[in-house]
Length: 222
Image 1 (spheres, one colour):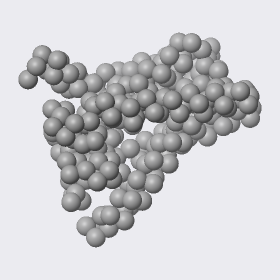
Image 2: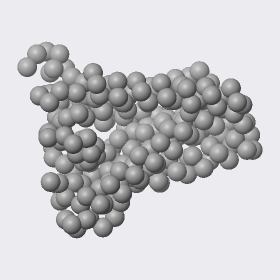
Image 3: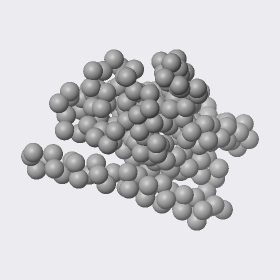
Image 4: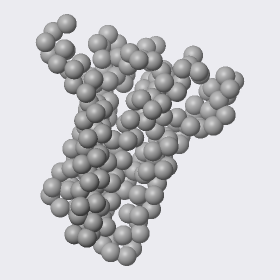
């Protein structure tokens, strides 16, 4: 194994701790700046922090999102292809960096709408994937649409999205330019963080497989 691979594996073993620290810092900043920050700034910070908890649910508590994702892609190696630890780390790290940059630049209605749409996307993705999983594994005893990431989508992103919409009507509404900008920038962000990172990192022989099992799907997997 090369030094680069060893360094990458080390980072991947620490990455979830780093994400948890980022979430803690962001929540701490919200508390410390409660009176100074407007509602949309607080919501962008909390939405970015929610991404960290979302990844923890997908990867470890209970984990197994990668298995469902890869099976949905008809993979013969669902522990590593097309999604692997490296590609998904980049997907979520990019999202976290962008959220932090929004806070550093200064939140505006366009940034707030981008974060709101990202939350809506997570809700749609995990709900539709859950329906797929229920249909596929019903014969093995699956009775709900739960899949790793669904809980943080509905308990985290859903109320935040509702709060974002409330601010659009009561505080600062996005203009048409903001809407176009949010959709365009959000589309670019999604394209870079998910399909592009997956295309760059996917490898059926990758050393960055999910080597700790299938989490929630251990009881249902094919």
